[in-house]
Length: 312
Length: 312
Image 1 (cartoon, rainbow over the protein chains, first blue to last red):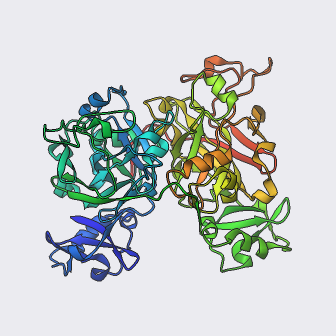
Image 2 (image 1 turned 135 degrees about the horizontal axis):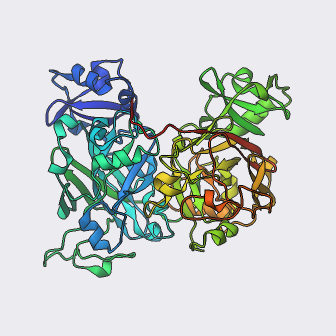
Image 3 (image 1 turned 135 degrees about the vertical axis):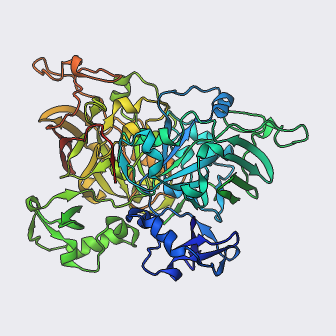
């Protein structure tokens, strides 16, 4: 099942895909379902009940007619992992523990949905604004001290994440902090794909494209800590909640081809790490994160407001 | 004005103090006020309207009869600062930027309210569970690119924070992450005190007591980055939201007195930093964070569940 949120005249509604092009609005089908995916996940067998209600239904709404938005309203925690793909560890030259995941938090306000624009910081604020294509894992069933062998049974589904990062701010001090939490700097979507459809995360491939050019391509079996290991680790500290999102870290960038003008242009790179093949996101760009078995998360990039005081 | 949340048979209600011992329940006074402090802050002049409604009222409810709980429901961001007091920087021997605050995020689930118990990790999970008495700043008015000179006008009020930390997990990798986000490991309260009552943060003194013994005492003028500087910095990245909480960092621990058995017992300290005068929190302890002009945040410490799988 593919479930997503869309904007309905300012209200967030849930839809379930019934074909490649059409969907059914959950509220049309069964008014007792809440408009919040987290509320559904919190109910016993909530997603199963949605799946039963949708079975056999021919969706009457075209996906092309709606704007998909972020589908997690008020999640308790959004975790992201740094340095979790071996190719990315190598390209940064940084070290990381091989015992414990390198986790940090993002705010909900730092992430938009599939048909919403990403905001590139104004050039007078920062210029090293980078995509990070990642697998997103959404928790469905609460749990504490979850053993690895039970971890995947706590997953509601998977999604694509663009863990957009502002590098200058990320290295301001010891913690990533603000550099990973610029307003609308990242995204996830286009929908939640349930595990029965997605299967084993490690068997899939992630591709990130900027303006149609592939900048990242990696099997998801290159992780230092896999999905089960990260769920198990985080659950040592707190009871994982339905709607908790974990972005599993990004692979390294691909080497540019000789004719790849932007990818070979290190002079246009800013911040600490200058890596051939890395191209910062700028207003006007289109960035895609695609994972086979999920689909493609596509966002336009717009310019955020320049440095000027705005109150209220 | 001192405004707080209390438990009313499972519902979160707001109360406003009318004397040292009594308060009025906002819902009793004016049913149109929402039960959410963030909802009130989000309204134009929301706190002013509460203050007008409460003016002259003699509260009929005894504070001693209710249980105060966390007063921020679903905040967009809870920031905390590491290494922001010069005494704490010195005792850790760590370096920090003098240009940019050392910020990180906490989840709402990691913090409880004033009359709720803190959870000490089970000893089979971690043992270096430490108090960090801090000043908490709650944002009232949204803003972006806020200049320092306007920053305090965006503050709804102040509170005490115990930024409880699990040291073993905090140093697992490059980011603090889980070590700062154990379930119910920190607290804030007992209430929000508005700036007209509190005045200049730098003129106040913070005291942390464990089982009645003073372990931290510091003027709040020892910060590397003051309240205005931190608000201004964070607003470079995103639009600060009503209800955003910023814990301003903790001062160093006090040296133990010769007769202070626990404070002098380095053998009972775990984790990376062993500092005379530091005593970990354990089940059965009572910890207090007091700031003059606010009051005292008091929490009992209970033991969290041992390492055993629990689903659902």
